[in-house]
Length: 127
Length: 379
Ligand SMILES: [Zn+2]
Image (cartoon, rainbow over all chains, first blue to last red; front, side, top):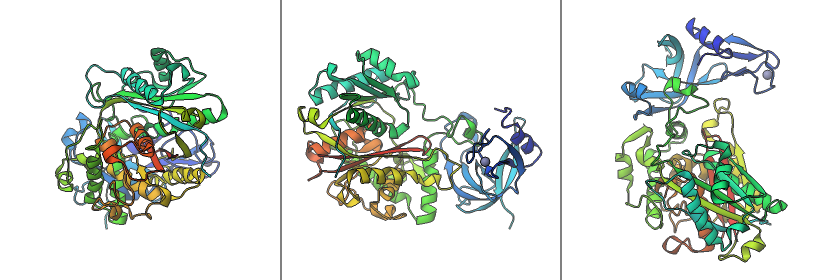
């Protein structure tokens, strides 16, 4: 799962930071992780620290286990998060029940360690 | 002036449902045999072969090789394409272009899948590779659930409104000869069906079935010598959003608007000219989005349009999915939507025939809300 192209992302997560690539040629901030800028096709990029703040674009709640590893977490949400700086991420919003999560909910990144990996998830932002 | 330089002269489906002992290839072959009979041609008249690998086909993009060998076709024009539910329309378009350019005279577009008995693979991690599995994002329903949730939040669309799409599909399937699910359902049944990926209930989701479908595309002149009234391709369109998270409105499938408007332009028609629509329905929300993208209603107004089920009924202002669609007829990933469109234009649908149906819109969408194709069928 970890390779040369995404190692910097996961290393940052391990350090409690959300970093995505900014194209050095055209300045486009991109996610998902890629070896090339989808705007200008340049390969030159730097890993930029983000605020971790965002809002929920939309979400769904799994009530049916498609994958055994997730059965004991049912029901759980999967959300698209609009990050403050522009890119969007797919993630989970922790600490909110299926009745509480909503579109436009303000969230901030958190990191959850699973099987040795620090995974970026989100929590309700403090008001 | 509609384009009309190619026509569908034959359609065929295999048996549909849970078919023990069948394979993707055997079902594709059964469908092809029926389409050849329907077109009134000989197998040797076919000089083009376009295929879609089923989820249970091991060959992937080399599927045309396996099927061509199996059915003994050595074509002038061939290939396989995998765009999920947009593939049927896209292959008919390729076939039409091959016919119009003279690269082939008669093209068979063929699909078969034994997804039901051979174990469906529709529960893989969504997204590219397995990356979204990290966050538990599995299966095809989740993308559409996210799409539906945002539509609900922005426009007040309700689960009950989605339920009317399911009810409409089921009542039409009851009149369709090869429909798998014919038992009537109500919106209350829809609401009571178990939640799969909230906000989508079981009855918001397509079936998983075994079956095959074949469509024969040829010139209007050759089609006129066939067994049935030729159904000409008046207009064709595609549109795709190949980025997903990269586009802020990806959840709304904005490319579908370009897809249908391209077909309208080519056909020289507008939404008010469409007599009947076969709108791709992997999940009920898909029909709502098509109604908006195809210009039958304004953005956000599809929920109220389907509510009560009268406007989309067979005798309504826009009959939708007159054979039951993916939700109730059979999950042939949009191939049967083309077949039903052809049959409606031919006027051979008996009790489910839409009176005066002369122009039909057929749409397909696929992958992770990425691809779309549309056909406008006419006489
Ligand atoms: Zn760039």
